[in-house]
Length: 164
Image (cartoon, rainbow, N blue to C red; front, side, top):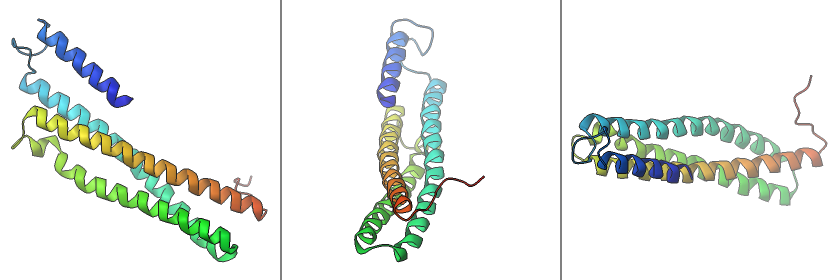
């Protein structure tokens, strides 16, 4: 949805510029400064998503530790659920690591030497899409781990609420 709104805003801006608006050059294209601003703005949004996901990585590690600790105290069925959930958490973490390796070379400052503005924006759009996929994978894994930890705690009479 965010991507769609961004693309609509971008299309509106492009249409305004090509209709004789003051932004951009006479032929409706963005000036080099405007291109850099557009690239940098999108890259900064992607980095903000990255930073949020890095905080989620802490949650993944904490949940993994909690589940590993609980695995010695549970039934075989619960142990299977823990193993499955640990696998999902691990996959989410791996997805994040892979995406971060892809993100580095997508830095607009690096790409400007060899790519056009359109190519840079396309590369950034792909990274924005990849960030959404990684974010969903992380959110799904964290939700499953959270539900499992709550279930295990309620079955064993453990209160997860912070004590006062």
